[in-house]
Image 1 (cartoon, rainbow, N blue to C red):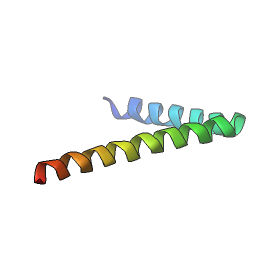
Image 2 (cartoon, rainbow, N blue to C red; image 1 turned 60 degrees about the horizontal axis):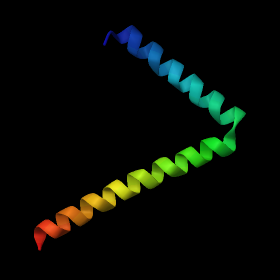
Image 3 (cartoon, helix red, strand yellow; image 1 turned 30 degrees about the horizontal axis):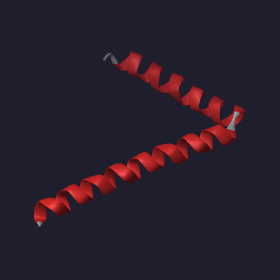
Image 4 (tube, one colour; image 1 turned 90 degrees about the horizontal axis):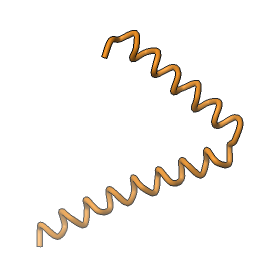
Length: 55
């Protein structure tokens, strides 16, 4: 991916995130909570998998 396109996409996403947070902070917080739950669940699953391998 060309560097200028990568930079442009980064700024577009950043501006969109700021806009989404400003216009609807409750929904943005719910989204962050949901993403955090997914991440925690994934790490927990990896931990259980490796714990079961060690048994």
